[in-house]
View 1: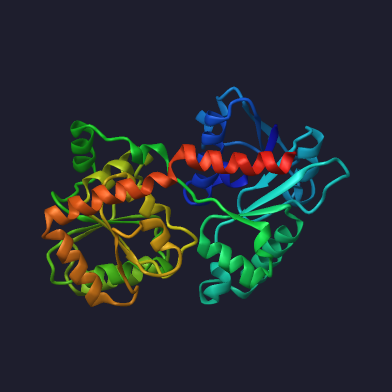
View 2 (view 1 turned 30 degrees about the vertical axis):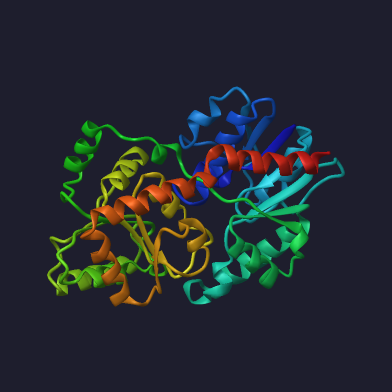
Length: 366
């Protein structure tokens, strides 16, 4: 088969949709080398360059006009006789010619519908129009969780038969045990505490990092938070300064993927009280790293974390505090939950995800 991808996020996004795009192409090309995989975008960047070195992965430049992604990318895929076009981030091109091609779109979440307060009026309208149009055009929709599937049915009015759930995995760095020397070098580079709990993700209101900081007030447990800062960071920083927690909360910056994997492995506990997620890749990263998880009991997070992670309501600071202290002070319990979590997370392995996706491609292409 010839499979074409909308590679905008593959090349432009450093996390989130970018990681999903790169990981999917990487594992498909590795486990199913007899197919040809084409990355369509205006230009390429250094991101994913090692994937482009694979013999069955090619970059196809599209025209550089303002709306080329919407008006040109689809016909570009048809001109190379692609069997399938896969929109990896909730969108499909608007223009196609008469050449046969099957269309798939991955929808990650509809948070802009559930929590409109986090988005401008204009962004909500544009997102809804794009997602609705893609859902109508697609021969099949990939949802990254059962939660997202339910939201697609509810908000986009799509029949259940048109949707398949295929979970996300994570970068292979998180599945590799780092050497003691590398772990020590990362600890020294970022001046990390001897013991700490970890938060990973964009530092924005929906991720709810402030409640984690509040839960640690007076607990003398260090927190390391890795993620891109938004305006919400100032709200957290004001709380930290007011409560004299500057020596308790750490924000390492410019952390590479390999270094982040090491930080996960160094952490005692991973904490993720996000209000809502389409899936929650950081939970998967933590479980593959052998780090026990405390997460919110909302949206798709229990799907990602499994029954041996601990859960709290995202607004229940006292419960979050008690669960952090419980795991912090109980090494045997941390180890037990980490071991069971590692077994659970194998369902998100590269091989299983690639197999599930390829079965869909093959069925559609027939």
